[in-house]
Length: 138
Image (tube, rainbow, N blue to C red; front, side, top):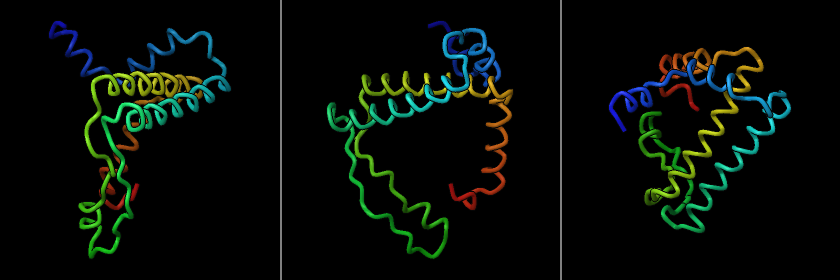
């Protein structure tokens, strides 16, 4: 891959992505199709994560009770666990990237159908979490 292509890939804007989705989406243009495709790809992402654990085994889930009994939010944050052991293998990572990419495609399509800027939504959420920091409690 040449460096200019790598630069474009790393710096693709939400607006450019949303515009490209608008150009290529034909078959599932209905808001109902878009909503159900978002659900479908959300399920496919969940399934791909589960298969990474149950079929491939590249990651393990070791879920235990989270400990909220700390003196500060910072302490709680630093002691929270994601319950994942291991790392995704190349195959599982590629599958998840494809499923997440398809989800993002339909998320951009939903934004197009409702005349919402994906970039503005992202920036608004970024501003909220930046301003609230740890107090956003997401």
